[in-house]
Image 1 (tube, one colour):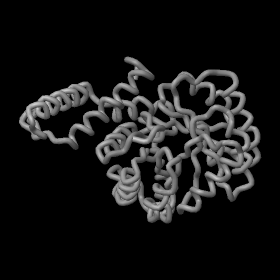
Image 2 (cartoon, one colour):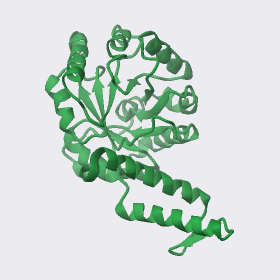
Image 3 (cartoon, rainbow, N blue to C red):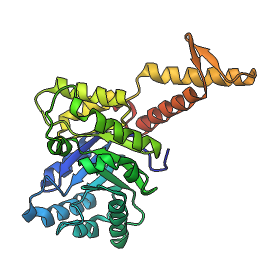
Length: 293
């Protein structure tokens, strides 16, 4: 795992134009908060939204939550001003929208460095057909990329697709980005779910993303947080199994064998890595949230 890996079961977009939403973020059990300067902020309120972020960061401690700022695209009037405002505020990462090729990543890093943010990792929104087609190129563009974030709402729109519970129109795109992320040892976060009334379909989407291999889900409302956290938290049975796998393989290795059998299943070295990852995620969640995760 890259050094900036951390649990990102829930990544909540917080419109930076509303100070009380920023303040409320300190009370929410979301692993990451994405302070949004882009889509949720009207052009005439961009400067105000930047000031709100600065005030929120000065006024309070956000604890163990990862703090990310989604800036405006660099080809807009606001992108570079966003970077200048937030690069040295103590945030954990910058999320760049409208990335469609490797050079876009490099340009974003150059702009961030020029603003004084050379110490910051970046995240990349995968939200257009071109981005999906170039997913591997984008994922491999820099070691400073912390994770890919699916922009599934914009992507669905650009594909002229329909939103269905099985998400069939997005499955290829989700898998393409997942492959690119894992090929470059990156975390990857599923996109938002727009229907705030149908929590059954939201829960289904969380569990589908988990089963596909995603690390978490981006959210647009606080009441989605418990569902995402639950879906992407290792179950006690999974933690216990991981411990047993590690112990069984250690015993087998001492006996001169590279394989073991646990509950009738053959266990090899690849299962050891998965078990260690499960325990690592479990321990990180416990360190941050304790029993309230």
